[in-house]
Length: 212
Image (cartoon, rainbow, N blue to C red; front, side, top):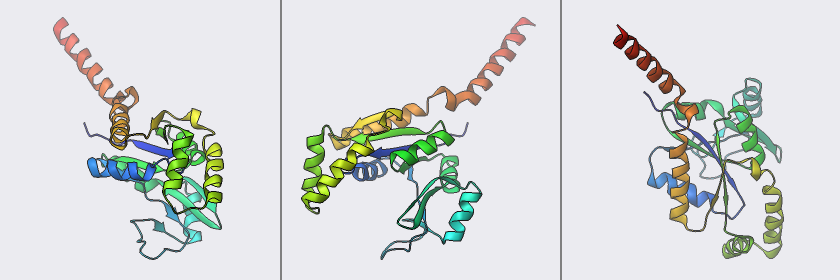
């Protein structure tokens, strides 16, 4: 029986290390695919269509909205950003587990549409460690760091609706934890209804044969 992929949405605090985790996960295992967002903003130097984003004009994006072609979308600073349904479903049909890295509100919208979606929230061990990581980047001022910490309070709202929380303390262990979640999700009853029905029918046929 063909294996279909799982959609996993990963969210977390800014500075929790989501990007590093996803990169390591894709390096270690070949069954994952990162979802590519669609946007109406102009490409930045070095960005490629179909690799970094699907770059489209506003009319095409709004056409996708009208046709229910997006799993979720939002508008920031005058530009649309969204997750194209066709790309995600194609990857899953090919048996790949799709990772989508977005914030909580978008994640919950996807969960409403697709209840089988696995929601994972990544967090550092504590607030002090989060501040140390933000400071350690050396690229942001104290005011920006303070804003990010305040934003983390907002980012935490809705975490109770997630399926799993993963603490990113040791990178390799965290990668294995996330991979374990996906592996276990493939064994959920909902993913195996067709298999169970097939086995039940076979057992029924076998029992009838023994009665004859």
